[in-house]
Length: 595
Image 1 (tube, helix red, strand yellow):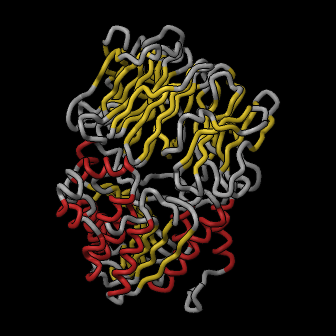
Image 2 (tube, rainbow, N blue to C red):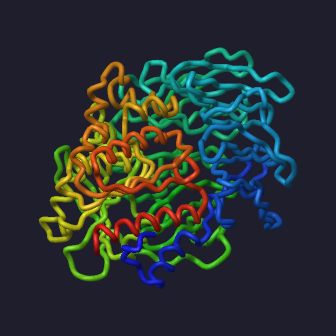
Image 3 (cartoon, rainbow, N blue to C red):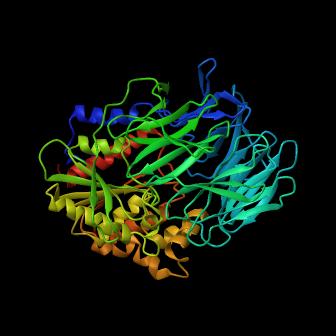
């Protein structure tokens, strides 16, 4: 660290680091025919890895052990086999591996399916469907047990494996042959001969998402997410008769769902205004029953065969816990619970596209505050009332924190999510500016001591904001950002290129001026504040070359900047590496924006 650093006290440093180091566990995935066999992710070793858990004996076993961690895994229906995805140093490009649940040798699951970015996986009893994406487009494979794997779908545009029916005679894929990867269509294929059984698409600007088939023999019902009325809702598609039943719920936000194991009801997740709720929806009666979960955010939920609902829950003050909806803790990581964090306050601010929802956190002491705007990535994501170790670290250091759920965020309807189309980056920053101005007007924010920071799309907005709103920001911290959009488009994974074409209205060859208008490097000469860039050497989403282009431009313009590089991809699964990155960011912030 720099000798000019305004160091935090050892007590404060220990507190924020303890939030990162405290082990966490994910919601366990369980085998359909052996529900006592579970798989979950945990960072108890200091790196996120996959763990097998036999509930009958309460035996836990670390199944994977890799230098940069293992994020993705699942179980076969009989619980005999663990499937996990092996990439290289966090680059997201790799192959599916298998391992016996009880332990044993790792094997490449289907050697004929070459390395790629993952595009869905459905593991059945008699076959497995694997989706892969490369620069050449998408390939969807079907591998029958004891038979030869084959390609069942190939296209230059994004596609994925979405759902395999219980009887394994039907496979649902999503595709974007119509040219817009943001709003996929669904296609049902016969696994016997790859023939098309049915097709469903709601037209331009309306996507469909296959959630899962009913988990019963002979049941042809597919749960689907749609947005026909301007928000995420549900329908049940009976594929056999090609009939559908929309499920209209009197809830203000977006909903998603999964099946109860007996097929009689849906476990509905409702997201609205930065918080979550769970409901049981009875398909026969239409009764909607709210489950009594605490106020906060649910990061996943599942209904077990005995009807018990298990969920991953936290709020801004309380750390994550895996618990049953009726209260008892299901799975806890060893060691001490991390320190509590800070409550968020809601703000609704008038903006150019409608009322903007923001969350603010106050540090100790009186306002106006030195303030960190921590802008989320995505852009199709949202900040919420969940436990965030990074947010708490900034508050520990003396900053107020502001989150803005700008146009482009999810949870506020389709029109809000899609409002940045054709003008990405600049649209979101208008909303950030509106919240900034409102907080200045209420004397919450000291305009001479405001910094902007974010990762991925949030890093893109950080760099773009520093160039287009230089009068607002005293410093900027951009983590794994898009910095030079033309170069980023050339180097990023094909799925993201397709997403960009949908978002920008075409490729750079077709609408170059739109990419240039939204590219941070275009405005590098206007950057007035010092910049810290954190970059992953193997990042397939925000590749390193385009970041180097931006840094070279800052160097050429003699703009104050610093860079921290790490040897992984789009973030790190190694806890100590994450702590180093936050430490670098806080050191930079404290030197340039004193709380």
